[in-house]
Length: 259
Image 1 (tube, one colour):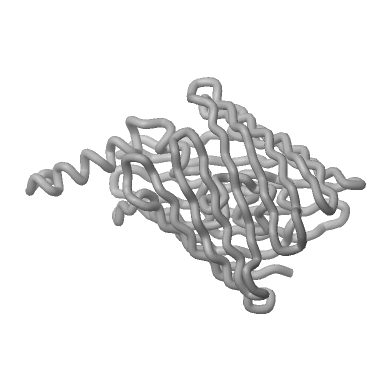
Image 2 (image 1 turned 30 degrees about the vertical axis):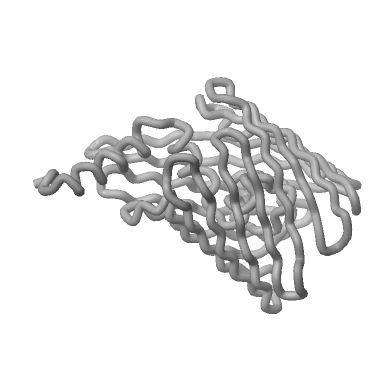
């Protein structure tokens, strides 16, 4: 039987509410699934993680990354990701999958991203194939992301459109400033037609040769992100947490390697 105790009843109601009744929660469950994306509130201009090709096709880095994501401290919901990116001149090709498994809901996002650069500019596009299942009903959805970025040694900017084929489509304008080789700052503005606009601020600070601290704040909903990345040669390990105004902490771990 489903509802054996009051505690189980409340827990199932909360999971169902998050997964099915609140689009902003579901959107955050199925987009920002890496440690760097949560630590930076989705500002990918400060990211060097292949896992963030899920959000932006113009990351410009090559490597491999495995990620684990437990949103809002809900033990029954885990999102796993495997991502890779490699150079095939003149393109960077990135591919991967994010997978969410729950007894009431299954979701997976397989994608292929292509990008190329010229001078200080990079342009790219991503094709997503999304699979969803609720009870005995399942369906596939195609979706696309597009992005154009500019980056020199000190300044950069990005125009990005995510989920262009769905009601969750988001337009994001970002800008970053590299103060020196150890510190970078960025800001972004996101517009979703059916939700409130959101502003974000993010920083990335190298406090020692193997350690990087990334942090952020966003306005809607008000959330803070904080992550610590450890670099060991070409291998990196990152742990991040992110707050929410009404829910528990989100926990994320990335394990990756650059090449």
